[in-house]
Each structure stands twice: as C-alpha cells, then as structure tokens.
Length: 243
Image (cartoon, rainbow, N blue to C red):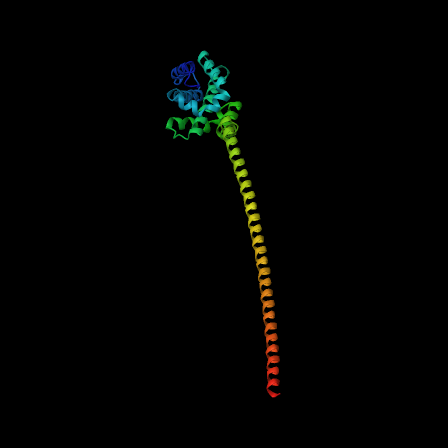
C-alpha cells in the first residue's frame, strides 16, 4: 500500500494544492507551467483511485517510491524552482503513471493522453538527465517491467510449479516407456511359447503317424502270414484227396 497510505495521501493532496496555485502563475516559465499541469493531472489520478495505482505501479513504487515522496516534500516546501524541483517531480510522477498505463491496459482519457503527449513531444525541453529518464520510461520501461516480473517471487513459484509438472510428465513418460517395453517382452515371450507349443504338437503328430505306420505294418504281416497259412492248408487238403 502506497497511494492508499494516509500520510502519503496527505502529502500528495498538499502538492495538488500547490499546483493549483501555481499552474497559472505568470512568474513561472511556460514549460514549467505545462509540467505543473501534468503533475496536477497525474497526482489527481493517483488520489482518485489509489488502490488501482498501488496495484499497477508496484514495481515503480518499489524502485522509486521513497525518492518520489522526497521530491513531493521538496516541491511543497520550497518557493522557487531550485534544483529543478518541478522537472524532478514530473519525471518521477510520469514513471509511475506510465507504468500504470502499461500494466493495466486502460483506455486513457484526453487529459491522460495529453500528459503522455507532453512528455513525448517536448523531450528536447528537458535537462539532459531528465531526457534520458523520459526516454527510458517511454522506450525501455516495458522491457524493464517484464524482467522484473519474470524475477518476481510469484513468477518463480509458477516456474517451480511448471518445473514440477514437467518432471511429472517426464516421469510418466518414462513409466509409459518401461511399461511398453515390458508389454513388448511379454508379447514376444507369448509368441515364443506358442511356437514351442506348435513344435510339441508337430512332434506328437509325427509320433502318431509313426505308431499308425507300425500298426499297419503289423497288420500287413499278419495278413501275409494268414495267406501263407491258408495256402499251405489248401495244399494239404488237395494232396489228401488225390491219395
């Protein structure tokens, strides 16, 4: 919680009042008045929906939250623009504001779009350091936020869960492969056993034919013996009749 914090809200409201008093101050340079108006718009947005900006500016709050508060206090407590306090507060506010715009995907109102347009179209009017800061915010902040997001504890937990799921999938695949291998071995063994069974059946069939052959040979021999016996008996009968 940052913008929703009571003491921070009070500091921001005091700064908004300062902006209201000076946005039309003729003693202030035109460009600085434009910046003051931009600060007023951004701070008013922060106060209007503090929970929204707390959520969508979390990385910016972590990066520059303390320095942002310091610049707010300095802005409120000094009379003149000593040390470029207007510019310093503007670029800090813009850093938080632009992060909220990037991470939320909200449709910007015309006032909010004017702030972005002011930063984009007037880069050359800022000091050298402020130019670098504005350019970084508009050009490289999205990459910076992505890197911060990928290294955040929440994403690390997701990565760990993803890694666990990946390991589980790998282990499951390994089990499936081993099971398939065992099934294949079982099928091969079954085929081998069936082959042996067929071989044993062939041997039994051969033995059966062999026994049948022997039986037929024995029957043939008996028939031949009977033929000789009856032939011999007929000869004896014939001789007896002729004597």
